[in-house]
Length: 291
Image 1: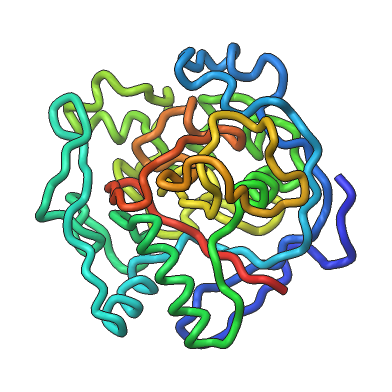
Image 2 (image 1 turned 45 degrees about the vertical axis):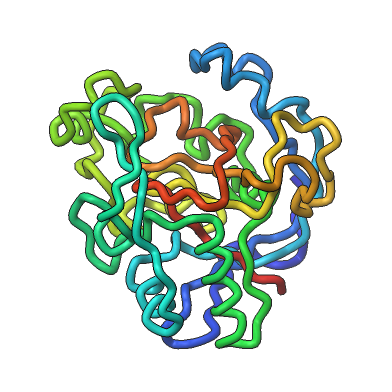
């Protein structure tokens, strides 16, 4: 990876209550799952091939949230704008179902304002970034999908920033594991890591060590919306780090997996598409800022 002159990990913030940001240096990386990774991980055929073909992507320097946007940060946005946010999909019996009583303020499990905001749609996340830009005069936005994977890899070539071992997950990120199973009977049929990270649901932001770019929770804790429209693979995708604005734009790309994801979903290359209006109890977002 060819890094720019901007030092990785340089911190910045634009106001007292603004999210902490970290400078991500520009560079090049190979985007997508390495040959044999999906087979080794046991990825289902319906999910296979979404991160192909491999291609080199150039990314300009940008700033990314050191953490996922917290509930406290999101609370200030809601209080300032009056944005509604009730109705969130939760796992019930054997599928996700819409619970009209759930929201970012009550996703169905205990949180405080240090936890990542969940039950947030893509439209909500975009509105937050726009509002923060108006408050600060800075160009806040969501990460592009390429920026997200580049930042999550932080210069590594393995499936996760610490390596390939799926059962070392609990030492590095918050995902579905023994603690999840102990608190959710319905998790019996989930794909779980064979370890215990001590957090059955979300963990406070920064509970685990950062990756090589100084970013926390790029995998696990809360799935993260990105700017890109959904496409089933990378044929025709931009190679300059921009958001892919063609494809199915009623769906947007979600990256990183959440507390309810097992090892399959906690990989730098793993990607899913989701409707822009959907709120899910394990999904939040991270913001970016142009430099």
